[in-house]
View (cartoon, rainbow, N blue to C red):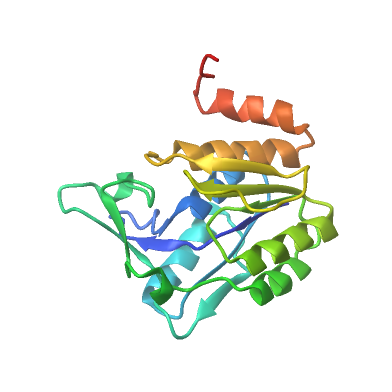
Length: 217
């Protein structure tokens, strides 16, 4: 089982199939397409947008038993320019804005949230910390992964200092301009780890499957 930790957003979609957006959702969906069992640990608002996110995750086959509700903050909404096709824009696109723009006005995962969620997911083989969370929440994620004996993947924003993680964890830096391929690559990587490949082989498979090419030294 792969556990992806992150904060999904609502994205309007004409067909209703892509109403869940964000890096964590992209990673989870990619791993699920590879055939892995996936659970998303996150938090959304107790509102209609949150309901749509839950329905979209269910349609994608992504487990959401550990998706918490925040009664005080709204589900983030991915807003795009009217000229853009919302179904083709992800939360990392430079043309997209996440609302509310103030991160403090959006739901946030606390250490206690991860402690509780991961305690109910002891069969995790891989834990992916997909979105920026507090240091205490990161520590809870590390502890939960260690308790389950799971591989740990931590994604960090471009240019940020990596958090203190165990030596066998994988830290990947998300590119500034991403068309969604980074999240898809991470999902394949997580799926390959969950299938039993060692990290080097799993990463090579993920890069190859994503159509990326190694840069020359």
